[in-house]
Image 1 (cartoon, helix red, strand yellow):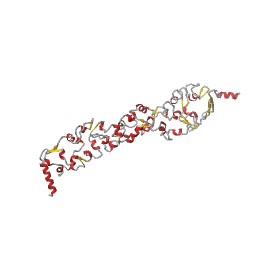
Image 2 (tube, helix red, strand yellow):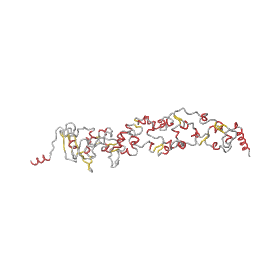
Image 3 (tube, rainbow, N blue to C red):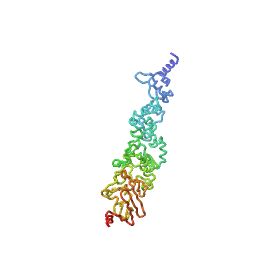
Image 4 (cartoon, rainbow, N blue to C red):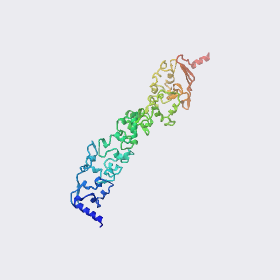
Length: 454
């Protein structure tokens, strides 16, 4: 037996016989405590070979068959409090800490990771040993949760905040989302839940089956607060299709903040034209509104103000083209009062009520109301769009000489205006002149026949 082994056994003998000589050095000379000595990260007393800082001998014989010859100098957590500051000063405590069970998470001698934990950077295994694992197995995961960095948001022992957060919810989120924090301060319009509430009102802080770790899919999440819109979406005969597609409400609105009203990403019209600038949008394809507007000399009043929602409900409607008021889908339709609510919500409501008038329209021959003549027919009346464009035109009164579609034919509408009236020579009837001050007498079949007879 060489000298090293002889000295080691002598040291062990002295330690067992005379407790005052015991140290970590004597504990490590045999294979009994190798698991403790070989830990990657040691408890400070173990690192300093101060076993007696926590243990003391209660029996001279060691090892003792069928019993223990060493015990802790005090019970946990009192033992831990000898070196560590005791917990219990904050209103929310982690359950093991509250119960004084430090060893539920920490290894007393050493572990594979920091803080005497038997995990490294990924703490998932440790946390799910008590907490339900479902939040850690979602399709979409919050970054820190995905890598098991629970301590990036939560205090492990105690906190002044609910759920052991290391700060109020908003502050916890913004300490990582710094770009968001800066833009939020500069935003002109902020979504009320973002301005006044916690981020967790909409987002699950751990994981979700929905993209952006939302608590519900859109629009269900949005209509939980915006109930009237939810009701409209559920019942609208003509819904706005983006709401039922991927992105939903966020296709048009920013969920957090914006420089524009109603959390739109741009001003109202550019937001709409971001989609309605295509020739193949929808089935069947909708008109390319941007192309309709480009270069036009005359714009419909709301369009001139950059407004689309004055006429169209951006979420959905029971009316043709999501109009806010009634309007026929057919080009020709039997007239009845109330079917042109969309137009008459701005234009004079009496426009189509009287066959003769001197105040409700300038489109008249004397007092004869020519709007009434064209539209009020119980069998086949002309809708407004046979003569007028709804958005823009190169012709006055939004009458476009080249864009009125009648099946495959583009009907020419040759309107010429004068100070007291005008003339019209469309593809649907002969030339007629009208004058508000000196009514034109039109030739009828009977008057023409009488003239020939003479």
